[in-house]
Image 1 (tube, rainbow, N blue to C red):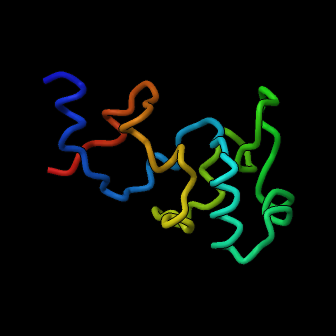
Image 2 (cartoon, rainbow, N blue to C red):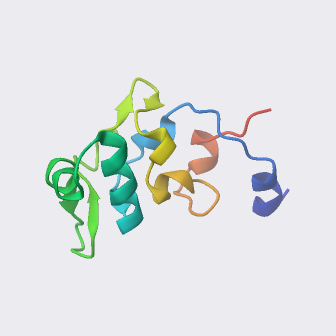
Length: 108
């Protein structure tokens, strides 16, 4: 089975493992707007409390240590799931990290 065929039946299990992947979550302007409204903050307040400059200095990312779980992970669930960043919403269908298949097994 090739990767496209495997992904055709993919359904997220909601396990939260993708929220533990090392790295940074890039934020789009739309992400910032949606997250700030969801959290009851102005966009400026959201950026001050929850965003950092990306390591490559090409935009904003969620604040936190890239080696630690996402700051919005509570147990195994995303606290901002309805408005999660685009990078999160499109994993693993639009982008993948090495070892994603073992981490993110499709539901049977």
